[in-house]
Image (cartoon, rainbow, N blue to C red; front, side):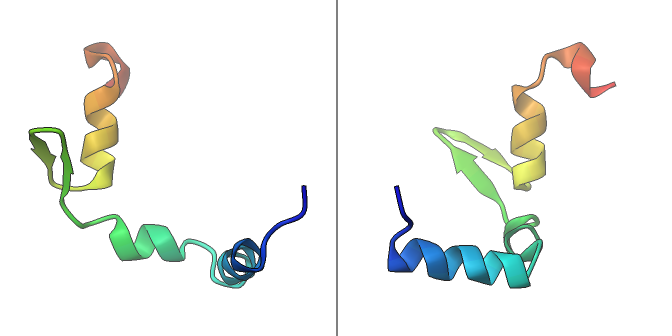
Length: 54
């Protein structure tokens, strides 16, 4: 299935600016349901079993 015009634009933007989303959003706080995290990284860590983070 071919990409739409919007998808092609976004793909091109990310191809020419690798890591732009991570740099832009990585340090912003995140809320998942009723739980808040300092960043997307911290939210991801919370999904791991306790022994996986060590």
